[in-house]
Image (cartoon, rainbow, N blue to C red):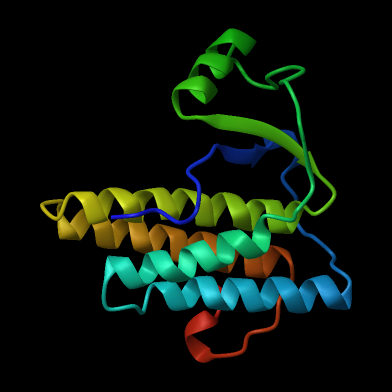
Length: 161
């Protein structure tokens, strides 16, 4: 299968920068709402291949989000910096700062699910129950983002958890 969206790192905000709530201007709220809605539609697709098409469209939309790549100044946890560095390097994670945190969070969610769908396309023998559990988790993350950003609900199946 040809991959049209380049495989790249998973950009994650510093854990200490994760917003509990995020106030967006009207333009950003509308744009984020449209993209989250499109992401939730991915899970209604009949095949992984169709999911990939939509995911890649979303990732192209989110490509323009400006981020600054950073090193971890301190772990704010019991882990040493080198332990986090090893983890990040193994999983191709890049730590970022962003003025558009909500969009950066969504990009991380979409990028992670995109990777899972690529694996699913390459290996049709994966446990379907585990795949469905993964999907439910990503739907929950998207709905959590909706709640954090106070996004409008445009259909009943989008209701936050």
